[in-house]
Amino acid sequence: MLRKILGTIEREGLIKADDLVVVGVSGGADSICLLLTLLALKRQLKIQVAAVHVHHGIRGPEADRDEAFVRDVCKSRGVRLQVYRRNVPELAKRWRVSLEEAGRRVRYDCFREMMKEISGDRLAVAHNRDDNAETVLFHLFRGSGLKGLSGINYQTPLMQLGAPVSEAGPAWEAGNVPDESFGEQGSGAMLIRPLLDVSRKEIEKYLQERGISFCQDSTNASSEYSRNRIRLNILPEARKINEEAAANIVRAARMLKETECFLKEQAKTWLKERAQTEEAEIRLPGAELFAAGEPLSGLILRAAFEQLAGSLKDITKRHTDAVLELLGKGTGRRISLPGGVTARNEYGTVILSGRKSRTFLEQAETEGEEKFLHLTQEWREETLFEWRFRYRIFRREPGEKIPENRYTKWFACDKIKDNLSLRGRRPGDWFQAFADGGRQTVKTYMINEKIPPDRRGQIPLLTEGSHVLWIVGGRISEAYKVTEKCEWVLEILVSRA
Image (cartoon, helix red, strand yellow):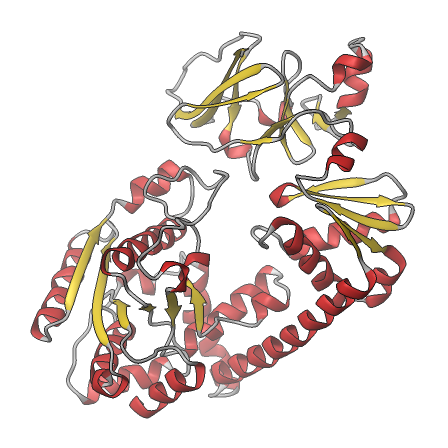
């Protein structure tokens, strides 16, 4: 197995001489195997090895046992170890995410902290071939595109894996930007997966033959988590059809990865030859985009979006499909996308506009800068159109009275799914005017309220995409109203700047 792991490292260029490799060690079979095999290859690879362990504050004495075991393993082998303790259940509650998601965020936060402290070059984690097969199936069942079906990469820039969360807010918080001061090595630090060609069966056999013990995580036997159900129920049934089912799934994923890479190059070429690019605006001929067909048309849109926004954060197939659907909805129709990008249909041309597109802002009758909110429990402040906005999130006590002040509003946090912003009106803006779900456009509301046309563009709106939570000084959307069941609340106070 050592030869197979060494082959993976050399073929994929995962490690180079003189690298300081930090290994994430939970105490389970996979991570113990990873630590010991890298130690066995240490001289040959000419590397240094350190370890990091995260105690999640879950599983009580079992987690304490894991920490003690990892300490003993590292001490007996002279490996530098850093242990982090975090209360993941409390953080999951604060951020309003699952324990699984909170744990993942916390782990990468701790990994980054360790790498920064010791100027690490590579962070090695113990994903294996079976994990890869489970990931592919998980993405398939959730409706992923080519990227998700391509499985786990052998290496990923560590800076791309979420944001530090020590001071972060809940899942809906905007501004998840990695720390650019990360480590002495800057953004060159990589997360690597040397065991990705090795099966779980091979790992356990390797440890058993050498009499090496490891910890068993009781939560791995629970069917509460989706991935566990795939591991415990679906893959065993697949192996009854073919013992090499997991290997075949991974092989198919790699072929899809190669296909995706080829099509991405085709998409970039298409964009270069057919699109018209101006400052913060890309114009795509609708008929040719439609004729390109799936999946190329989706990849073209992703390439264009990345060019405008600088990343593909939060962009999914649902968004690219929505842009393509604009072509069948008539001129003037538009949608808001993550990253401050807007798409509209203009006589059969798809126009993607970024935040800096003054032409679009003028056409949309939007005046002033769009301000994205960073939701935390600490008070924050923004100004727009000579108004000052102070806002925070807090946990509401049962029976706590909702204010009826015209310029102090509460909104239910559990209804917020995307980034919030403060801005002026745009065509297509709407709010839920009635409890039964009935909508009204902001334009109609302003006409009915007899707001003079020259003032309409200067009224701040609190928005989630095109859905308006609050026309400041006026209506709020029924969809975001606080109920007695609402635990977390967004509070906004407005005054003259």
